Every structure is written in C-alpha cells, then in structure tokens.
Image 1 (cartoon, rainbow, N blue to C red):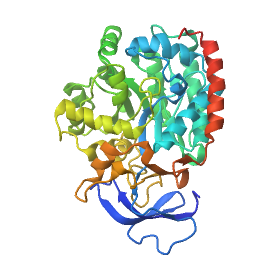
Image 2 (image 1 turned 90 degrees about the horizontal axis):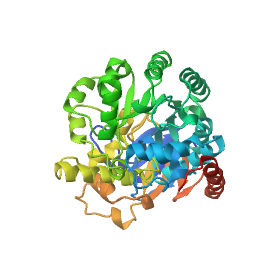
Image 3 (image 1 turned 135 degrees about the vertical axis):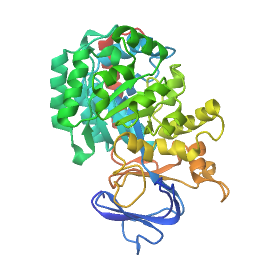
Image 4 (image 1 turned 180 degrees about the vertical axis):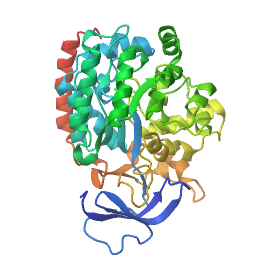
Length: 448
C-alpha cells in the first residue's frame, strides 16, 4: 500500500510541528509514501483502503537515535555491571561470536519489538563480525534505519576477533556502505560507527574522518557515558573526548554521540554551531550507573537531542514510549517539575529526534510533504483518557504504553495493524533467534 493513496480518517493528530499543533477530527492522507494532506475532511470521500480512527491519536513514527540490534540476543546476559566490565566481561566476548546468521535474527527480533512499540526509524551503531547479517536484517525488517559496521581496532579487553586491522576495517566499511547505502528503496542509509575512543586508534579516527569528508556519511559513536570512561580517555589521549574530537577534525563532520551524560558547559561552548547532536539513553544510563544527562542545558545550548533505548543487553527493552517517559521523569527528579515538559520529552522521539539525525526535513512531524512514517495510538485505552483540558502530549508521555499501539506505518506501508506485525513472522523470528543464540553461545565459550 506504500505507493497508493489512502487515508487515516477522523483521528486526533499530534503534529509535533513547530507549534506542536493538535488537530482534532482530522484526516491524514498518504500518497506515494508521503503525507499528502492533513486536516478535517482532507481525505474527501471514503475510499477502499482508508482506515477509520474515531478519534485515535496520530503521531509521527517514533525515532530511536541509538540502538544495538546485534545485542538483542544477549538480553539478561550481562546484568549487574558498570560500563567497562559490562563490555569486557560479557558484551565483547558475545559480540565476537556473532556471524551473519545470528546477527540477522538478532536484528529481526529487535526490529519486531521496535515496530510493535511504535518505532519507525533507528540509528544503529552496528557490530563487527556479522555486520552484513545485521544490515540484511534491517533491509528486510521494514524499519527505516541509518546503520553500518561497528569499527574497533584496539583497546584493553578487546577480543582478537573484534580487534580489526585498521586499514582493512576502513576498506570493509566503505564496501558495505557502497552496497547498502540507499537499499530498500532508500529506507536504509549508511553510517560510520567507530565504537568509542577506548577501542579505536588514532589512525582509525583519521580514516573515519577522511571517509566522512569524502563520502558524506555521518559519524556516530559513544562518548561521555561514564566517569571511568572519561578518566581513561584523558589518561590515554591527554585530552577529554570533546577536546580530542575537535583536535582531530571529527567535530567538523556530521557528528552524533550517544549518552553525553558528562558534557560540561565548556563542552557545550565548543560544539555550539557545529553539526553535533546527542542521543539520550536514560534506561541504559540508569541501569549501568552512568548518571543523568542535563537535557535542559543541551536544549538551552541549541543542541539537537534524540532518545534511544540503547540495547536489550543494557536496558532490557526496546520500548521507545517507556524511554520517553523515563526521560521526562528523570528531569523532574533532577531539575524539578516543569523543567522539561511532556511535549519536550515527546519531541526527543519525534521532531528533535529527527533533527539529531539530520532528517528534520523528512521525518519527525505530521506535515504534508514529509515521509509517511506514522503511529496510531488507540484512544480507547483507559490510560489515554483524560479531561478535555488535559494536554494530549502529557497523556501520551506519562500514560501511553506499547499496548496502545494500534497501527504503525513506514513510508506509507502498514507494518503493524491492530497490534500485529504484517511484514514479519514472529514465530519464524523466534525460531531463528533461538537456533542462532544456541550456536553463538557455543562459539563464545562465556561462563554465564
């Protein structure tokens, strides 16, 4: 149905546009994968393929700006650790055992969870071994994505299979980019993913910068997540993360960091006016004991901020609605009620999330001309009932769960209908995931 004209009829549209307009009793007309019109009566006479909503809420599809779909199989296998032991003792040994088959099913398992929760777009940090399987999984999933090979060539505790030859991994990522950038009708775009400063050498960062300049690909990495990480970077590099990225020319690129918990006022002054964005991962930051990112400070500095669930091995869920709720609650706890409004929190996964990924002209709001990536929440759910005077953004942020997800549309294609996947087969995915995980654990030889 992605190439046809059809209409979501009679919904209550939370546009998340610049004014955060709410349009009641509105039609959203979809044509050739884009939004053609929004408003009361915009769809004209009813036609086959139209969907009657009876006041259900229509929102932009949710955007997750940081995700590890390759870790979906590892849910529950790395509990009770801070970041560096979490990586060195469990996650890296498990990732080193991936192959294309296990990565493919891990990706589809995570993608199905994302779609059922209303996520339509992800920025995926990737994996090393199995990267092709991950990219193929994204291609087949129906998700819109930016993704690429995860780049690592050095670092304490890094398994041999993840310690790639610097030049070889730069060649490999460019080859994968040439093959997958623009795949699935443009749904999949390529991304450069150096893991973080403690696992990437200076020559690797130099090569990433050169590729970004030459190919126009954005760079996504982890930075300023935990104090211990920052202290080790300072010891090894003689500079903190932002100083290092500025000195090496990385800050001159389209550069996105996950976490940013320990960004300072001095850092914000240094990145002001750059193509720099932050993806906030509150569940992961809480579970790994990293801290709470100062979202009001980032907002005041004009820095685009998105949100991400990080991965099933550190947050245990890929539920974007739960992530948005936690982001709002933590700011109230840290800065006081009213410091970060419900609409501000919802923008993390919509309009601001799109801006963080350089996609504000394509995604993030329900407006004519934008991609038809849409989420419909059932208004019949008791948790979404409220007085007429209640702000619907607040009702969604603090009350909506994935149980309310009625329909999800990506590029005009309905990928979730009445809470069920239409493109993916859950039983086939569970079977493939179980078979692949068994083999992966045998290869990994990790004592669980």
